[in-house]
Length: 211
Figure 1 (cartoon, rainbow, N blue to C red):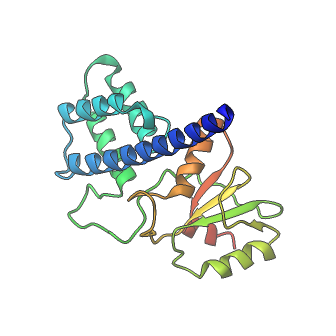
Figure 2: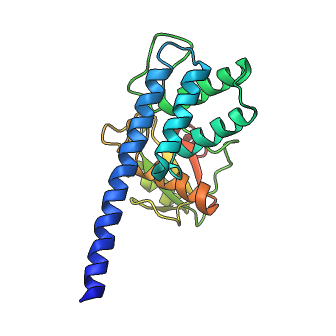
């Protein structure tokens, strides 16, 4: 009986923690968008983001919170944020949120600039597992799945640790869990950063070059 109670308690705790982490990720994305709205980032704004992350540790192992926290920790190791670091941070936050820092024009319907595998890899098909996320601009996903299978690859609808390539559609999905990315991308980055798995995250246009 006690084991059953403990199991239920653990499930409830994990569910609540997941909800907290999701909320913190969304809050940070919103915070970053606000900070870079004027295309300038100050040292006090950067310190505020770092302090916010330190006060919301539950999400520090999740993208993009982990990336921003690590970068800010390095930048403030000497206690100051110089002009080059401000520029670097501005570009990082713009990449993560999908905001543009060189123009007032914003491509709201395009995917945020995600941390794709760098450099983009050669794509091999034989025995490799492919998963897609977001909406493909070039073709229906069913056709993409057939192409993968015809070339000797394995198409998987759901993301798992066995995936070798996660292809991100150029058109963002309005149903993504967070405004800049979805669960598949979140899981891939978690496996890459926390478990060292060799999962390639590639944009649709790069995948098309290897069809």
